[in-house]
Structures are given as structure tokens and as C-alpha cells.
Image 1 (tube, rainbow, N blue to C red):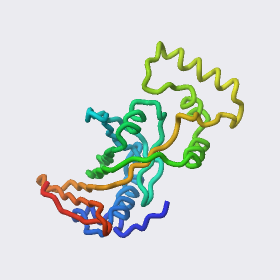
Image 2 (cartoon, rainbow, N blue to C red):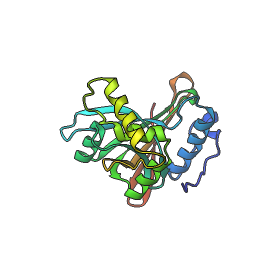
Image 3 (cartoon, rainbow, N blue to C red):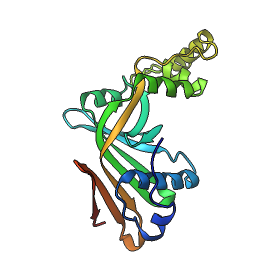
Amino acid sequence: MSLTTEVPAGEASAAGIPDAREPYGLFEAWFAEATAGEPNDPNAMCLSTATPEGRPSSRMVLLKGRDERGFVFYTNEESRKGGELFANPQAALLFHWKSLRRQVRVEGRVERVTEAESDAYFASRARGSRLAAAASDQSRPLPSRAVFEARIRELDATCPGDAIVRPPHWGGFRVIPAAMEFWQDMPFRMHDRLVFERDEEGWRTTRLYP
């Protein structure tokens, strides 16, 4: 990760959202505060995808990488979200940090991360998480929980140590921001909203009415 933080942590919560030239430093400042203050999964984000016909679906996933290139998460590529991302490579993310009364929205196109990135992240996961990923036909019908657990036990017995390799249909996606909106709760619902939109020269910013 190589983001330059231009906004001191805590400044935004005291007096609304400060002006900034680009969104990544502001995101890093807010993410640092969320990491320190949110009781559960500060890296949780709502991922929204859509079919080519525009039928949307949303679910919670975990942010596993971030830099100026975008925001990365990993999944079974044969899942519903994987299928929708291949068919319509656009997505929206929402970070909601309730205890800090903040949220960040991200919208942009999606690309697959490299095989090397997926391999490295998969190898970093706990053994149980790798077994579950390899055993799961994510989003498809499951006859019973016992069937899934039996598949995990079989893999556990046949793949000792670190022999669990990343399934070819499991990998990462990167959401490349075209727009990011920062929202800060303020008294009397006079909330502060700051939008960054990418253009040919970098980023342009706009304040929005709450």
C-alpha cells in the first residue's frame, strides 16, 4: 500500500469534511480511525453489482487491498457476484462506519487482479478458510450443510499442510474508482457531503446539499 495521507486523523469528525485534492488520503485517514474505533470488521463494505439488464444485487464483502489503483476483494468467480461482474464490469461499494457516523461510496469499473496477487492472498489465508473456499460451489444449491462439511473433511485429509492450492475459479477483483463520495454526520441533519469525480486532469470535487 502506498497512499499519502493529507488529512490528519480526527479532523473530519470535528468540523465536517476538510477540502482535499484527491480522495485517497482522505479515505486512509478515515479508514485508520475506523480501524481504531469500529468494534467489528472496519474493512467490511457493501458490494453492489448488476446484470447486463440492470437487475441489481448487494452483499457484504471484506476489503483486502487498497491503493491508488483501487479497492480489492476476493471471491469465487463462479458465484452470482462473479458472474455479474464478468457480464457487467461495473460496481459500487459502500463503507458504513456507524460508530464514527461516516460513510464512503465508491463507483467505478471492475477488473480482475493478477494471478500472482490472487495466489499471494490465498496463501495468506488461514488453512480453514482455504479449505472452505476450495470446497464451496458458492451461490449454488446445497443439498444439506452435512454435504459441505463432508467435502471440507475430505479435502483436509487429502491436502496436508500447505498443499491446498487456489482453485482456478477463485480470485480477486479491483474496483477502480470513477467517483467517491464522503459523508459525515452533522448536527440537525446538516450532513457534510464531498464528492470526487475523476476527469482527464485528475479529480474534481463538489460539495452536495445533505
